[in-house]
Amino acid sequence: MESEKHHGSLKAYVTGFIASIVLTIIPLLLVVNHTFKKGTLTVAILGMAICQLFVQLFFFMHLKDEKKPRYNAMALVLGIIFVFTIVAGSIWIMSFNEQVH
Amino acid sequence: MQQSITPQHEHEHHESMKVFGFWIFLMTDCILFACLFATFAVLRTHTDSPFTGNELFEIPGFTAETFILLTSSFTSGLATLAMNKGKVKPLIGWLAVTVLLGAAFIGLEINEFMKMVSEGATISTNAFLSSFYTLVSTHGLHVSVGIVWMIAIMIQLKKHGIQSVTKRKVQVMSLYWHFLDVVWIFLFTVVYLMGVM
Image (cartoon, rainbow over all chains, first blue to last red):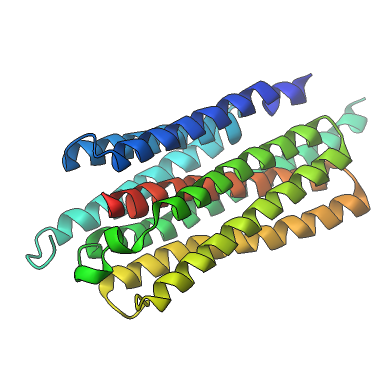
């Protein structure tokens, strides 16, 4: 009983799979049909990629089912901080270089 | 009573510590990919007319790769589900499906790279392509390692069946596979979709 609760169910996997398919098709259609201007489009597709990250984390990687204390989730938060700092920091600092647009 | 429970409990604790260790590895791998993504984001405009993402990337190709990898993430989830029910045969079966999907993904990616190279877009052509090949092939290499790893686990499962060690191995393996799927989603969005925009 406990192990079933701990590792998700078929329903959770199918829901996660359908959600990830939908979250892939929508940005693809948006880009192919040139629905929005470039700026809006970029924000929209990045937003959907982040949604999909959470789908994978909760439906497939069972982040929510972890027992307390939640060390795995803490490691993940630290990882996200690192990734954000590296990516956003690099883009920001390189924007001062006039050769890079 | 106390004595009969303690070793078992300790063992489980040990296995869960190993899963935690793997999460830490995944986060360091995140840092690797973050560096490559940052490089790509900075260099993606450093290219000239015939070699832009718009000219080079083919929508059917990378869409197929995306759906194959998404499906393989799902099938590796089904494998863990079969494992939790204690069924070895479906477990190995779903792992085999995942391996085949992973191999199909790698095949498509190699095909894509060969096409681009034959058009003259090699890793040394310009900065955009250098960062593109480095980023995408690092992911491809991870998937290839995952395929070998998964085959090794399938052999171990056949030999030893489902017990706490092989269980943890499958669990860690599927975390790795879902992680690669997440990385690909950002590749699909940042490299390919924003490339053809």
